[in-house]
Length: 187
Image 1 (cartoon, helix red, strand yellow):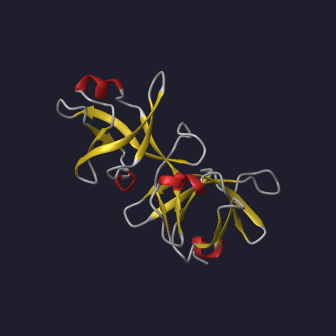
Image 2 (cartoon, one colour):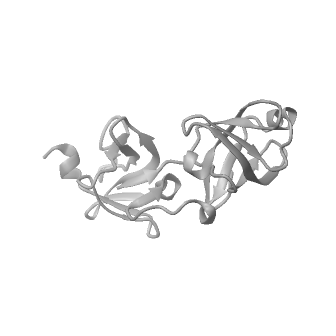
């Protein structure tokens, strides 16, 4: 059970996943580093949308080098260092329909953000984001107020690991995630 982390800020439009941000230029041919990269979304030939300052550019990846942690890409139409520098900081997104297929029990992080979290009939809270931890990914959940109006925990947030013992069921379409609070509380 896992989520493919993409942390989209919604700038790419509905049904888009973030592939990272344009970093510093690399060389003279328009190539650039991608920061916060989701390497599996940056394969050769992938159609990428770049949300630049004044406009949006859609282009295919025509060069892929570097490592998965620090990829270097060049986009069709970005032909020199100046053009790459002009895009620096822009978010790169890929339409969900063009993203690689996920395995069963895998979701894009953006699909989970905003889902309501329940333990049976008790509402626990709302997923804020997906957090990468050393051992697994976890849902950061903003806790709902209890019946009396008091917060369930003073911190206001709960981390729920994306493991089968903690997550009973995920219904992305219904925007609902079922969790086992007894497991999470160690009872």
